[in-house]
Length: 493
Length: 95
Image 1 (cartoon, rainbow over the protein chains, first blue to last red):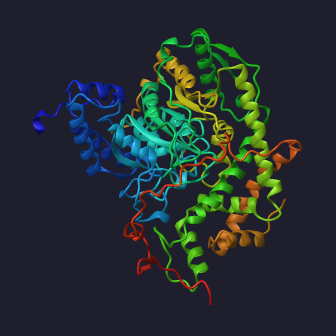
Image 2: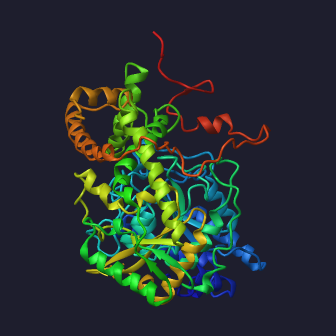
Image 3: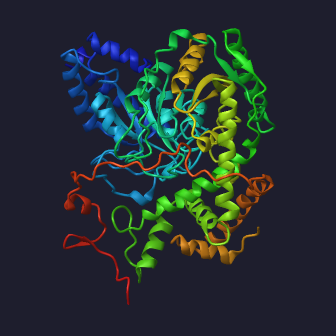
């Protein structure tokens, strides 16, 4: 059998693997074995996975081969995928990147993992992340930082750093992350892959370990827009287990692809090109804007999101406030790490949480508890929620004049490991352009649009609520004009 | 708004997060610098603006009240740090 194993090109997209599986060029079992071998070698270099789920992956691959042999199967059947270790997987360790969930094995699957399994996708591992999805560099993981495949002295972004890095490093063609303030789009930009945050309510959050419930969504990473559209189709839709999912039908996301840029009105809000933006990144993004224009889109520079400068402080009140409530459940009683040598319930819980949580998680629990505490609620939490209303209204107004907005995804390219770890607010600024979108709830995508000193730059497109189709159409049209997404990191692996 | 060391200790108590004295000092400095950045919010006029708790409000989402499968007790307790007779065990909460 071994001598007959074909050489498998792991640069291929999910769509290319799916076609190869259907013509019998290789089997899902062979593809999965090649993938497992690749992600094990990648693991030593980039620390992208917390758990590699070999046994489950091989079982799923064999089931996929059976299904494909009968001529059946979905676009993802037999295709390897990584999932962020924030998504509950039945019987498989789920850590959220935290010491707090030491030894925890969920008793159920989250809905998106159920949907992946129904589609026949092969889950090869749980990817590394910032603890409880709090961070922008993947340095806040109890399992050590992920390294950027383009330059291992730099961060991959976060919090879904492992999911972005493994797609960039050609470990898997697809992965899932979560995005609460930029945690899909920012690492997608820094790792040179495509990442999409769906509209709030588009994808079920059931079984996703909660950080900030009113802001977060699960979404896809891929190396091209077609793959991202296929993965979004697989996970999107109403779920009776998540009452915040909407009943709107999931459209055919690729139906408009052949229309390209035709008739697209693209707004470029000046507030996203201010003094915080690195000049080299600005220049790359301006070149992309010219490309949109020459390819047939119309550019409107009159749109405004004037309150956007308040989005960052509003976010860092709202998200920690929700986190302080969501993370109250970790008490050392039901599962995970537990300090057992205290004199009282209070002492044991405080000691459990003091040890179990890392610095960034503690910092956010403290900010949230403060913002919600007596005497400060109106000045902080209520004020932030009012600012949220203004930002939503401004996005709605801008998107009444345009089909989508175009901005940089991040103010700079990937920064060095350790550079911002002691300066939390500096770290928060790397999500300056992504987190306003979570506050408003709209969908957005990051696609590769060039390089600065060998490091990838992301182009950020923001759409109307539940209009992922237009975002994907524009992003796909851009990828047909350019080859940035085909570039692979030169790291030695 | 300035933040005192005692306030940091109070918040840590409310949040049930044990902090050493060194951590209290460190946390105080970090929180104070983050809170400074929140001041920009007070410059925004929101007198007539209602708050938003969630971006696309769905109201009264309900379903028929039909009992479904639930998690078996053994499986729910399987990860418990301490258990006894089919229950989670904690220290006494009343003296």
